[in-house]
Image (cartoon, rainbow, N blue to C red):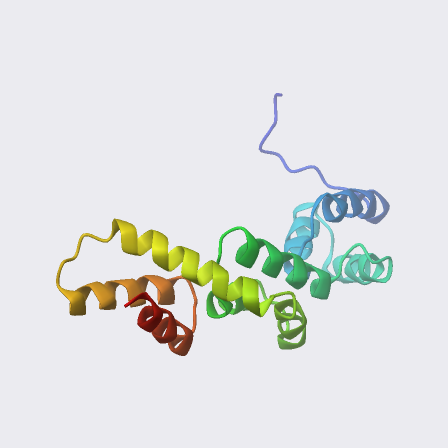
Length: 159
């Protein structure tokens, strides 16, 4: 407990074991793992070599990460496609992996999520002016990442 803020440095072999456990615990991006490996005091060459090994051993898989991210965000948080794509881009995921991840979205469930959010928000929205009310509901859904055309269709259905 004496020197908690002093980083412990690991050999590449020790770091591989630690990184494998880090990846096994939950899906990670290459960037998250890279940052973790650098925190172990490894050189850039060692870090890249370990990233390749973790990928070969299927402990690190960005496509799988993207799929898990999409399932979580659209299933639990009810995010829309646009917000999910921004989230994945911010984590440095490739366009190909983002496209693969978005295949996890079931279009029926996606629309159902949006309608549930809309109904919940509409029941708590205090705005009386119909124009402003519609605008507020539209902004809410767009902030959740839903596409403009879907939002407009949903609002028409609500009226």
